[in-house]
Image (cartoon, rainbow, N blue to C red; front, side):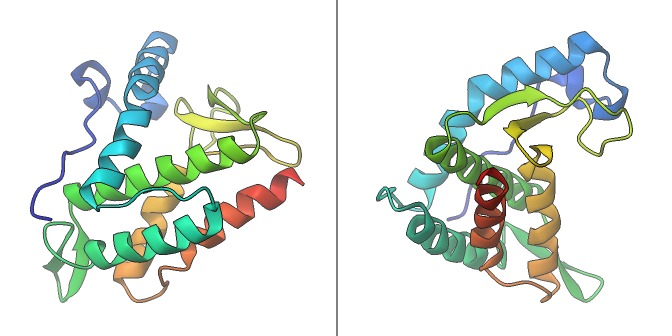
Length: 175
């Protein structure tokens, strides 16, 4: 796969850090996000020639392995200072994988919904869309965490099993 569409939000919010957005900017991003998230998941699946079987764990394991293999090669990563660094296309790929995992969590537990993180202001996901209604912790935002894990994969600290671990972690918070 040589090309992959970047995950680029509208200009009015892309030029400002999320923590600094006002309420209107957070809502604008949220509305944009909701308008593209399902298409991004379909784009990911089409791009990597995958379909969902209905068995979430098997799907995530298989797709996570394939995405991880793509991540380790150009154009999704590139050498930098003797290590592999994630590129903008790699960020888009991982963002889309996080959206797929989120979709499957919601499919299994429809009470989980997307909302904007509004409290506390110090939350790393403040002003961003996150999955809400987890009984134990309130919300989780998988995109940022998935990017952190992808960088760990490129450093050799994690394996493709992390994607299933993320899914299982979220599901276990609901039980």
